[in-house]
Amino acid sequence: MTSTVPAPVTRTAQGSALQAVLLDMDGTLVDTEGFWWDVEVEVFARLGHTLDDSWRHVVVGGPMSRSAGFLIEATGADITLAELTVLLNEGFEHRIGRTLPLMPGATRLLAELAAHEIPTALVSASHRRIIDRVLTSLGPQHFALTVAGDEVPRTKPHPDPYLFAAAGLGVDPARCAVVEDTATGVAAAEAAGCQVVAVPSVAPISPAHRRTVVGSLEEVDLAFLRGLMTEMR
Image 1 (cartoon, rainbow, N blue to C red):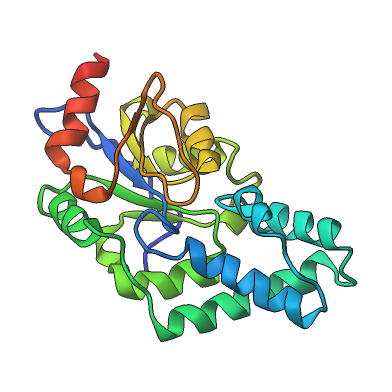
Image 2 (image 1 turned 180 degrees about the horizontal axis):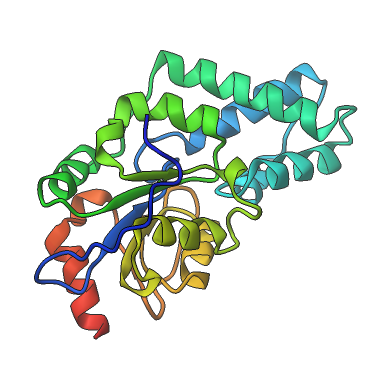
């Protein structure tokens, strides 16, 4: 099991300003953003409510407390936030137990970062119980640190998860490359001062200062990430 809070140690990638790579999980490394929506639709159907497809862009990428709270308010469903959270996590666990497709390029990128001993962290808004299930497919050995949404006071879009990850790895957030797929995750990484690579999964994301947008992880490798840091300098 990957330690959630390792002893701080300063580590720098040789020959590059890049000190660490921080990776989102759902929609970035694993093709699961659609899974969450499908589970939400199924759970609310059992409660007697139909979800409007336009709400999908509202709930994607954020903490479960925000997305679940929004859906309760939007539908008027007679269920508490705590009860709904349990149902959604259970439904998602069941779904990934059947299949867990990785995003194109994810396996290759993780292997390359590990081969070059680049400090790498998994930073997700998903709860610890979900992350631990997904790690069996991603390979826990690829991550020096994992941060779950239910382990920080404020999760995405706040910067806390990425600041926590950088501190745990003993690196400067400004010299971390973050890979994200949603506007919520991008906002969190940028608020933390990180260099961001956006790989949009559900909704479009525009390029911006310290933000590069690519079509898939197949366009991202170590040379690409180091190049972003060189351009920043």
